[in-house]
Amino acid sequence: MSSEHMQIGEVAARTELSLRTIRHYEETGLVIPSARSQGGFRLYTEADVARLMVIRRMKPLGFTLDEMRALLEATDRLDSGEELTADEHEALLESIRSFERSAQQRVADLRTQLARAEEFAVTLGRRLSRTSAP
Image (cartoon, rainbow, N blue to C red; front, side):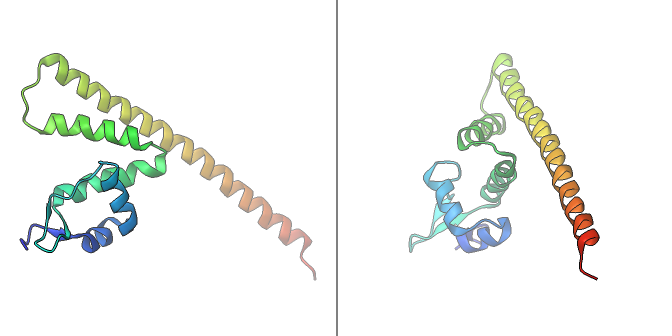
């Protein structure tokens, strides 16, 4: 096995994703192992790990698998070296910009939810301290 390749266990440890989750992303076509060992084990590269990290970061923001796929396809096309027309290039960039705007809005929404949750926890703590038995 090449030192450039990692087995799924190492990838799981590096990405903090379960083996099951990584296999699911393979089944859905989001991340395909770059190679297989002679024994049939999945082998991943740094690029595969980077792809999984994009997915891992999108998941808590509520992006769907289809949205993840669309973003990855756009970045893949931009990074492929494929000759693109100016219009195609701009459309891909606009797609990525749209994802960036959506991610920023989702982060802001999560911050609001977190602030409300923290307020609730503080309120409960105050309530308990007022009503605690002597």
